[in-house]
Length: 193
Length: 205
Image (cartoon, rainbow over all chains, first blue to last red; front, side, top):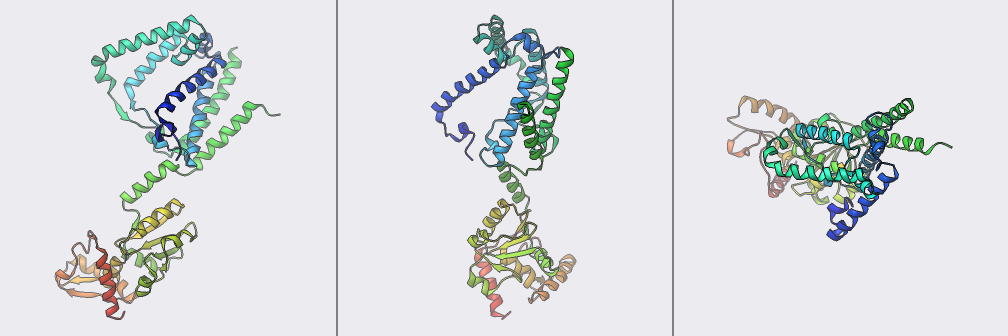
């Protein structure tokens, strides 16, 4: 096993600090090049006129998933060392609704707001300001909502754990779903324009 | 020329669908092996092995991982002598049922892991090694105050014993039947196997 490099210690703490901004800049660069720093383009997915966000995010997801799965198969990646966030069903569903509402109102998500701000868009700065204010409010109120925040905990589970199927079958199902989604998205965009 | 988008979709579809047919990943294999070991699915009992030999199962292959001299002294019928190195060069068929035994050394367990990592699915270590083979197949013992269940089990064991040229020992003192004999709940020191093998030789079996 040679990866993840941060978990095996191959990079060292200085290396990790140097690599993180490089990955961040790369991510931001490709988001901007994909046009995702432009709020109307992002809002287009809610009106089914421009599904670029869906296609970009699902492409990233499928690429990472297939890469991680096959690297694990050939022994280059130890998936046990890849962090799996814990699941809290109800709090995360509520968080998703709040996130979606903010996305629809502001036209940007956290990553794309940074991209928009970096290219001098004021709406990007506005969303970043709102995001920081939200973080401050959340942390100030955390003691009051801690019980809810930690409710309905499932631990670090994955979809294949919950479905009781092999990891490979899960990968195949999500790949088919993504490809069907891309085809559907392309058709919807043609119809709505 | 095919558009790049279509090429990428075909690559993703191929990699995704092939994933369904792929086995557990390298990070999962150790976890699955640990679960097998924890559940005891890596072991076979001496009476069950005796049944399989008597049925002449065509896929059964037994490897004795003790030294050549110890093998010559006594070994299980149809077993072949091997070392951990020579076993690594063996290539049994993919559906082979492989049984490994030693006399308490770790080589049987280590070979089990090596064979499972090579993809062999039906690999077992003989529980308690050769000691259990002698105690429960070659020389089954029945205490003089045995229960009905123990007597029924002894009849089966005696049949095994006669088939493999052993001597069933009926109506021995309870103290001569090791604790946990009928439940296999004991741990056998290496010396016990050596003594048991030496005892077999003295009777000229």
